[in-house]
Amino acid sequence: MTPLARARAAGDCATGGSRAFTMYEEYYGFVEKPFSLTPDPKFLYRSETHANAFDLLQYAIRRREGFVVVTGDIGTGKTTLCRAILDELDRRTFTALVLNPFLSEEDLLKRMLQDFGVISRDEVRRGRLASVSKQDLIDILNEFLISLLPLGASALVVVDEAQNLPLQVLEQIRILSNLETDKEKLLQIVLVGQLNLHTLLRAPEMRQLDQRISIRYELKPLTRRETAAYIEHRLAVAGGAGAVCFTPRALDLVHRYSGGTPRLINLLCDRALLGGYAGRSSRIDPDLITRAAESLDLHVPHQGWLSRLRRRAAMLTAGAVGSALLMAGAAGLTGPGGMRAWSPVQGTESATMTAGASPESNTQEAARRPGYTILVGSYPDSTAAETARLALKQIGHRAWCVDVDCGSDGRWQQVFVGRYVDKDEAERDAARLRQTAGFETARIVGVQP
Image 1: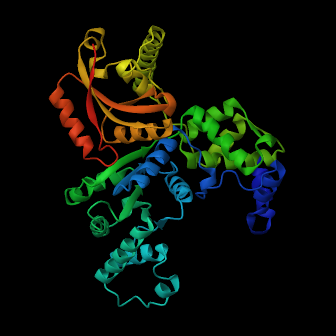
Image 2: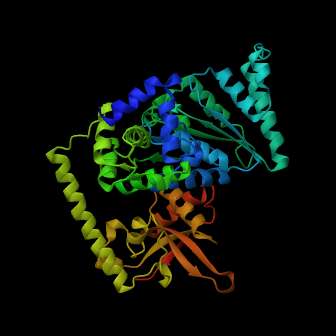
């Protein structure tokens, strides 16, 4: 009998089928199930894509942006990310989390008011608000939002699975975004959904809503390295990282079968741990991963000759770019004004830009030409600067950070956008940036040849 078969037999003999899972947790010393499918925020692993999304959402909430859209394929951790963001907010931010998108306009408003604490669940359950009109509910919501202003508080609503929202409910959400003062939005709205949410928002009838979205971000699957770190992270959070080991080859297979999708990683690893427990093994090897994948009917995606050719071309390109950057570093290239560039972890783009030329003009001849760039802002720490850079990237700009020594004020980071030969073009972009919340001080500066 195979390890998985023995595990199933153990589960069949247990009351309610739960004993096998409990025993594998006890066997490995876990305080809880490490690969549960529930969106527990403490298990959030901040891969590059998840960390960027987390920082952007925090930035948008601090800046009180109106609309933010986060998308990702099925199982990429969108709901977990949302719950982690909500856990980080202070008490001055009132939140509503809408998990069921199949609501009427009135039910959506009631759900928001219930989460904000304006109405009680008992009132909704007993039908006491059945005769209240939609306009009355909007008026109640508006009064609540206005009452937050003297307190310096704000309100945020997060709608999960937003791709399933009926068009009339999406239109109602757009109307709610009109609740504002002369200076700021009263309600921040984050729409979270699968990739087809983009298609929904691009529909002609959704044009008014689509134009109001200030930040968009798409979550990507994990890389092979991130998959290994993700597994180690979840084992550590569950309290039993030292009792079980996934071999390097097993980790390779997990990534290949899952494609880097966190939900599939969880399914595979949970099933492999069950097989490891049945075989009394603390070493999760390729055989256990393969058998787990078979039991879940998972298959390694077929990679045709065209995909292999593209991958080979990408590797050659990456190698050439890496060599160029190493040569640039050896030559001591600096950012605008002779200041050495600060390169964040995500800084492949930043490193390229700090060489003094955009990708379209990245030659020695172009680098010698005089031009202009836009100073977007100065920040006292690298986190704030990187958050601003990511926000600029999301609205279509190529931005980079420069480390500046300000003497007694310490080191600051300045954020720049673009390299322009045409001053008028630079002025137009700077003017558009000044109309964007958080970038009101954007101005052009000259770059010496």
